Length: 177
Image 1: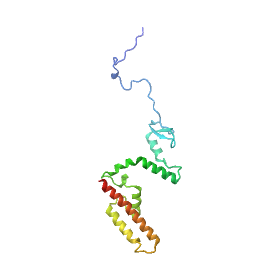
Image 2: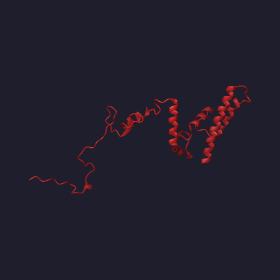
Image 3: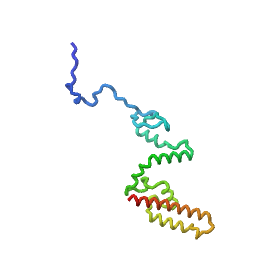
Image 4: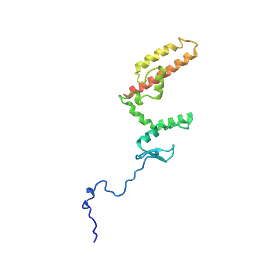
């Protein structure tokens, strides 16, 4: 007479071990050829496509490093997409108002960085250094110093515009507190 074997947990499920299931666990492997690591990082096969690759962490990082969000777009379409993205995600820029933030973390806009480059300053320059650089550059190409020089007039306008961008940004920072 065959008797059913009794379990060792006496009917209390919480006494069973975690690996007590008899079915094998399903693990999706990395989609990279030859990789046997678990593929737990989804990545899009192409833009606006619901199909995904599943890579391990190392291959996901490799895949993402070569990803070009603006691939195949002309300059106008890329600029339009960029403005749409900025409009949708502008609320995330609020974190830049903290006092410990410096220029390396995105607290300066692209226009501010261009203005600093035009004035020949580093990205972490304070406003006094900006004012000194602007005055020095503007004195060199001022229309009173170089009359009838169109290149100097355009350079003066560019320096003035760069200073205005940086001054307004500084005023916004002071206003926020």
